[in-house]
Image (tube, rainbow, N blue to C red; front, top):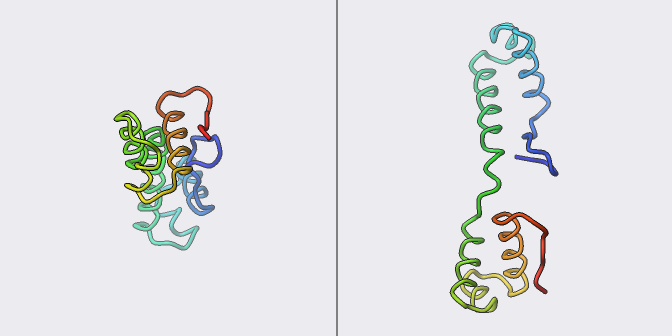
Length: 113
């Protein structure tokens, strides 16, 4: 989970403290005693933090709704037809298409209004 333009995941204060102690070389059993958690819980929280970092970079992929909108536009369908298919408004499909193009192609964000 990224916040703003950062690619770093947002962690709870506890996970931040656990990661800092781990990086300082403190054993998991000692970390658990200091934060009053069981060692298994500490290990799971640290593993969850590592998985969050791996997932933070995947935000550039298109969501299914974005793919449906872009595929519909490429097939020549109007925003209204696509909107009725996905249960959104025409204005929202324009916005979805703009963000999808921005994610896919980079460059400036151009909203077709």
